[in-house]
Image (cartoon, rainbow over all chains, first blue to last red; front, side, top):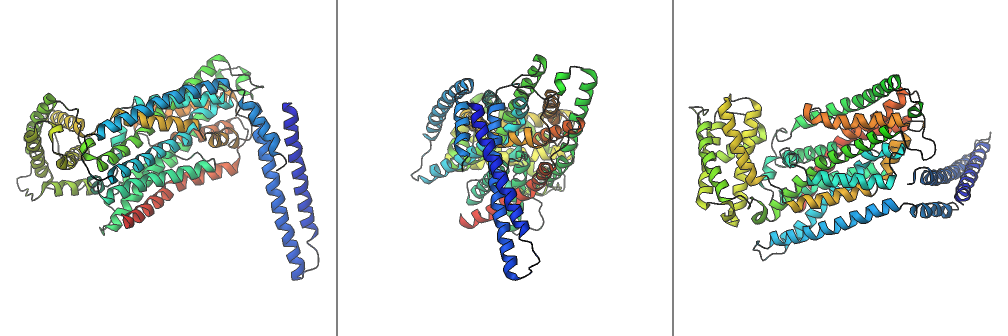
Length: 75
Length: 532
């Protein structure tokens, strides 16, 4: 039971990290030889998406860590 | 958030697994209720003698008391990590038991404290504000101090940073002192106790070094002398450390909690007494419990002391207003030819005033605040003259002065039992709430690997030894800094590495504590002075 809940949190964390990696790749892919203002805007927007994905991954990590602390140290 | 439900499920399930912590909380809850009833009854009884048609002093008293108790409450949960982080991460105590245990020893520490620190903290405040504590300036000072300290403690707690509460309080006091100097258009900052700022500066250098190197050395010595491998490996599962080291860790947790209660609890008590004297001087300016025989002793001591001080008066001294002279001396610490004459005259004046009323409780309510201020000025002058060494008192004269000061302190430096109970409740309750953030930082975020039994013991023993020796040797050290640095020292000694982002944040918070508290309290003092 306990492990199932921990696993759910672990999977949620892993999924969030995968989304973050995808966001980083998407941002990186948009750094192209097209040096127009529009291209830079699109690239920068991808940067904002990456920041959101990073925040989600860090939150998921925090929740997984908190749950592990509950199990290991009881608080 | 997809993961929120399982996270809540784990928390709820584990919450039901802590019957010991729950029982402790219930016992403490009952103690709180009894304390609350006792406090309310005591306050109502004390205020029964106050004759006033205005409700505002009581409203002000209520708000100020809640703020002062709020400071103690925040102080409680801010500093819990010093006592419980190592016992929790070494499985020496179950966390909920540890915080209830720590809260109880904080509670006991406050109740058994002497009160010396409480009045010591007041001597750092600007004397003119102490003497006008019933005025807008006095209340502006108290509120500015408390709110600045609460804000910085809450801010550092929110980010999980174990910063020193004592440094915060000293910074707040200095900030008010500077703002007061600037607002009264005096040149310089003579009313500010820069010696305290220097002590904080020394502490910033000494504490991390003491904590880091003493804890590291202790661990290295233990490794050389005690060959039990279990001490130097991460705990397996929930296994507690060997009995003797577990006992040592619980003992140090107890000692650190008790010392914190008996020391930090008094800071709030001193400020509460200032609030009580400012809002309802009739009830709290003078100690009504001083008996007729004690008053007679005081008068005899007063005559004797005036004669002793008279021996050291400069023949060329001329004094117009002894209170002005002495207040100026306390503010500037500049001894001059007139100081001893002013002191001698003032001692006689106080003696005559007390003789007129025979007992302190007979002093009319409109004169109580004034007589208290007179006594405060004389007591502080004697303390500062002796400390300065400007007058070479012989041994017998020193005894006379000490006896007189003892009588004076009995009349003015008293703490009603309900104040201790209220502070003990606030500090104890604070200890049990909101402790997790800083405990996690100390236990998980300083080193790169898990805290071993040996590391926990080395860091906590260093913190405990620091508390025990700091007062005796007069070392300006912070327990919070010593413990955090101690954990870092044991990590370095174990070659396990440090989390430099945390170390950087800690260093930044420690360095910023004094200036930020100064700025906050100075700004708040200015804002409150503009309002009141």
